[in-house]
Image (cartoon, rainbow over all chains, first blue to last red):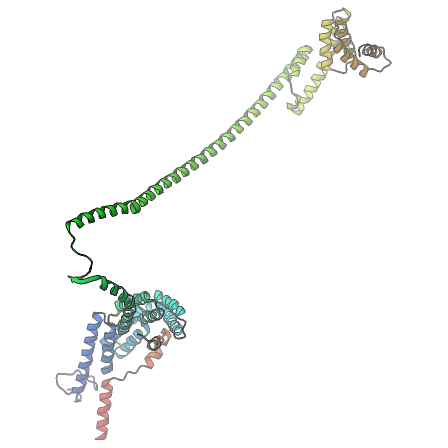
Length: 455
Length: 47
């Protein structure tokens, strides 16, 4: 303890050894302030923060330089959510004792966490707004705002209390009790919270009284250990007959309960399981059907590709065969085997040939066909003149097949049929003769005469 | 029964962080030691 005048350390004496000032009352005041601080500390330790706050404030009213008391008061404010008051106390404390002061650490801890300090400040502003809402009668808005405040700063005792008060006013008793419990969790000695809690008890009691009065009429309540047992008045000891009856009745009721309560639940459960299984199987079936579809499509695509490939292969083979036949025909034509060359040439599809090959094909075709036709015609005519009509018909048929506009071949063929008695075919070829030759020619007139004679 | 209006009067707007400085300046920091010193001073002046 130091002298309030000179700052020298005081002894047990009532006077300062340095300046001689009477420090008796001063010592008493310091002692009172310390006693109040100790009481405040004890209360703070058991979370009676309101009580602690009052004692610490009184301690500081007695002696404002009581640094532990001021720092503890700051801590109590901080714990109750009043950040501004807490910081104010710590700053004042630091001002009185700049060195070796724990307030330094507290201030640093708060100021270094800028985000948290900003959040506190937002919560404070919102609280002020909520208070304004409450004062102007906008209680719903006040509740919303206070809930926001507490979501940011859940130790804000004033906000909890205001929310509880508004909740009581709007008949939200459970909400009020919840908030008050939170307040009492932070500050056990909060008089306001205790009063509000009592109020909520009263409000709840009205409905509880009704229930209890109903119980009291029909029941007898007594205490056994820590439990209150309420026994209906009508309970009485029955005779043996009643016991048997009661057991039977109990069994019947039990079975009925099983049937009406548990059985439907069991059936429902079984149905649900079955339905679940059906759904699972359906899902599996759908999945498999989808897989089958996919595989079928793949198969179709593969088959189409195979068909296309086969067609391409067949085309390639046909082309190759066509070229083989063309070469064969060329070779036979060079050997002057025109008839065989014509047969080989017949196997060639000119559309499948390349341009160069097509030119060769046309050359061979012209040469071979022309020669073959003339040879065949010659043979046919000779056979006809020799009276060998069947042979003549065979050769000349080939000629008209290769060149339908060969008028002589048509004429002799018609005559061969006529000689063979095949009027129908004779008429076909005579008709051709009439079409191919001018009407003034002998052969055309002969043909026309036949046609006229065989309509 | 709680009187809502009366209870509401017990709530005050909270000081915001920007107001710390003002709060400290406006604090009445006079304690009993100050009063005692003043009384001693006055007594001395009278005599």
